[in-house]
Length: 504
Ligand SMILES: [Zn+2]
Image (cartoon, rainbow, N blue to C red; front, side, top):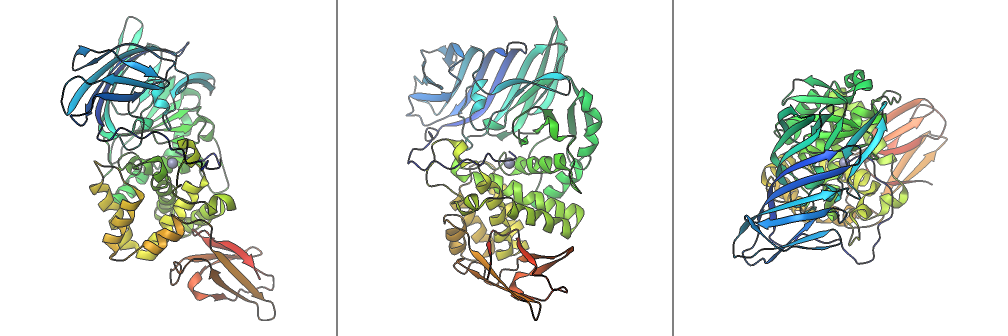
């Protein structure tokens, strides 16, 4: 996802519910009939669930505004019960897998929306963190990804875009029935669909690429022209793209972007946005493309580990720009990454001790600080070990969730060194080290030193962005001293590393 909400973590010792131990939803097949005018749905879902053979009750998340009509386990009707947004289904026999089928209907309280954009009403889902429960029963947690077979039945005039590869689209009786298959697992919060009047532009790339834009904005697809190069660049960094297709979908959503599996949703009004020398919609798209590897294919073990997903997406966006547009572009984006975070968010632990709601974890801390820690790790262990570790994780964690501790261990195995001090200071620790700068006017000498980093920055080849009037330089921080041309005291910013800059 792009753009955090900036709320404070509620550190009150309460933790959001975890999935039941050993429960693994492996595949979901859903058939959903929708009335876009009322947001009413009438649906069935079949879940293939692996579980301990001692498990007697399976808990699934489902919006309590939806009525459950029937439930069955392995074809036998069962008496289910509801409590808030939890649907509990009894498992009658000793088995290590069950097929659970649920028929349900109603108007969800959250997760399914209709909003105006580009002169039309667009129906769309928005699932982070557990709002996919508004249209599908599942284990709504990042650690339980699954494959999906989704059939949507909508009025015939509408176009449907969804997670997965389109495998069927038929018209009958005034209705359109469209089917999508996601062949590789992704977490339920990344399952999504949108219904509207879309114009689709296709591109060739490492996989087939489609850009679904609201019809009035169709020409803006050109702003996403580099998507094939983005996917190729990330495949070179991270290994093969994990899915069979990629798409972007223009929707009037609240977040700037959402990394829905194989179908990133990008906020409608950003398509026309311009900024000096930048392409905002492309920046959001790159972030969401990174998530297809980090967040969707490799999933965080818990919401506490969200920085593994958001930090990677934030940091690797700067890496894509460095590779597509050159090292100076990479430096500019890394400088912005370190600049665009408040002192409070910078000081906060990357992995919260506890949280109440997953939304509490969503702040600039996991994005910008997370990205800065990825940069620091890279500079500390070197390019070869860093990128090889990322590729190794992509292979090793294709079928199990990645925790922060496991991430550290994978980096250490590749680098052949202990990263304990770095993780203690920057991941588990609070506060930000200080960069003390001094300016000696007579000799025009800028010098600096670092305090409070517990030695983690000693010898690390990060850079400082030094500006004096309209001139600027990228200077190795390890030099400790720099003499610019002019007489005015220069401004100093770290490139991609979080430091509080103080002037002596
Ligand atoms: Zn993100």
